[in-house]
Length: 227
Image (cartoon, rainbow, N blue to C red; front, side):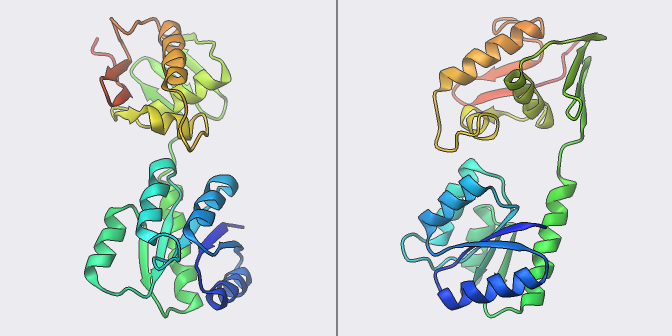
């Protein structure tokens, strides 16, 4: 049963969506304003967020940008704003879909199912290969050059996340959010220390990297070795 968070200030619309989406197999929670919605999204980790733009404490587009900084949860904007600039801004800010009020429960349900399908197909493969490095996410095993690598749980999660984004620069803030589950940030030193330990177990150093390339002032990326 997908868990859907509805961020909507109108109590009548919240009640209607709880009822209509519940009848269609969704577990629904709600928030009446932006900051409550952000807290609920981070604490309850819903499968999808339905977001109104006209919120009393903060514009929904700003909430979307804040949410995107710390989470990849799918977001459907559901709003009365039907102008192209509002739609473009929301999609550029990270919305996965945009529906204009009034809409039917059937339409919103179909949009939710479509976004969740796209999100599911985007999940990383359970077996990740980066040159001579092989990672089995489900079995939580790592093999390098044919031999096993003994990693701590956090080191494994860090490596698996980087491998799922191979070739992409990942910021320390993103790592703190996605690996350490610290959405409001934390000490960059935590990431640096674990990267140092991980480098050692992968047989490299920051001065002579093989897999982990630091990008000064930005973050780190996992690459396939040149040899």
